[in-house]
Length: 217
Image (cartoon, rainbow, N blue to C red; front, side):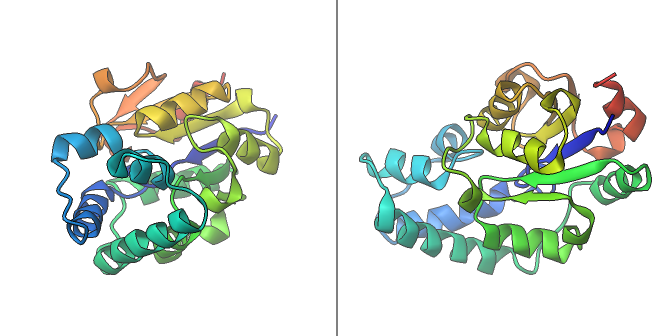
């Protein structure tokens, strides 16, 4: 029976949230808007751009307007982050340990593909992953389980045999809604701020492959 491990990207593979904050601050400052850190924590981390833009502009933002605003903000992020790509402690060692044991792997992010390309490309992950899904590949964003169910289908693994690494409330909810086991990565939130996970880690030095695969029997 095949088993799979699926990673969210922001806050799981790399701790990008502080850099998204900087990009969003600049994006909103151009419009004379100055959200607080608390507002970002509540309405940015782990959320899709359509939710974030709609929340802060106080009206629905969709279609062509969303695409243009998203491109502006994500370009800012990539510009800020391009020389700073740095995986969370222990991630690469853990990831290659999974591959040495023939565990199937995937990434499922709410971020645009260009961001995934920057990070996964920089860390040479693409050639080792059997499923790669970004925001363009789904119609419903987390907490909807679509990205995780699609990942399982692509990996040809039953959702019951998938473990997801997530760091946000909406991401953990999406994985649980997909019927998967979840490891909460406490990079942006405390365990109390997330739905109940099967395991919690601060970084990947606190976990090994046996422990993770043990979650699925």
